[in-house]
Image (cartoon, rainbow, N blue to C red; front, top):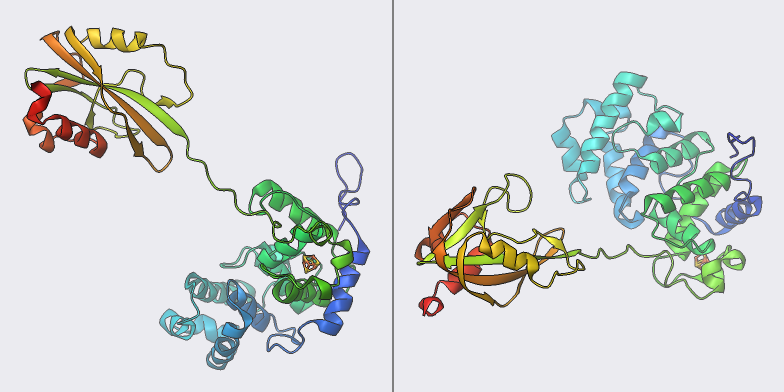
Length: 372
Ligand code: SF4
């Protein structure tokens, strides 16, 4: 497929390669699958049903369900008019039950909006429940011979290996590039054999582990094979690194009480009482100022008798890891209690609305030895 860009150039020229699709088509005609029950038909209902059942499910598991489903719901009208419970019962055991609910909703829309005829335009199909861009392309390729590209997980794997695609295919930028390549590689004709060929290659030869490269029609052009990287491609989903932050926390004590501050209503520990902090939760790499800010902060609370660093703690939130550095601050005399702060008796700390790690820290500290 070629499109005119705003610069008057044809996009995808550099990606187009008719020999690629020809190799896939030739191989499919000889070695591909030809006698599956949903092949050799242009009935869009049957093709659609098989494509939905085959999402995330192996062919062997689908065969029996497909036959029983068609026996009970031979046409899209039968499916649309059936109670959803009946549809679910016929799907039971196949898994991913959203597919069954979407299947029924899709049948209802095809009957109500298209008079029971599946639209031939992939863009219209992709607007129906449970049908994504790749599934819409497969349905129209098999039922109408439409030139539309598929890009399911198997095809992404084949492309990533053949073309040596660096980057995780689930990442938007990489996926967009794969779609451009999929569009550019479409043959002018024989869409059924080409589409089926890509599916068969991914399912039978270019499998996730131990691809059967010696029998592959794409071996001579395969970057992963040539460079011995079939194990590494496609690139796996990158592991998320959890950001790390730190917080200097003040355990200000006087006369059996600890000073707590009410946190803002939104954000981490929103609305709870907690220990006053020097700078809030800052990046772990943020330079410390050698205790200047700490010294200034503690003096606001009264006449300081002693400051002592306590053992640090780590608390893991869903989106970052917090290194808590508590400092015990003993006051000889309190200043005026600042706004949003309260003095709470240490022996009643269990009942206070505190974040769990702060409560644990204070309960440990509340032992009598603290005031010895
Ligand atoms: S040569 Fe091997 S890795 Fe490359 S496409 Fe074929 S089966 Fe996949």
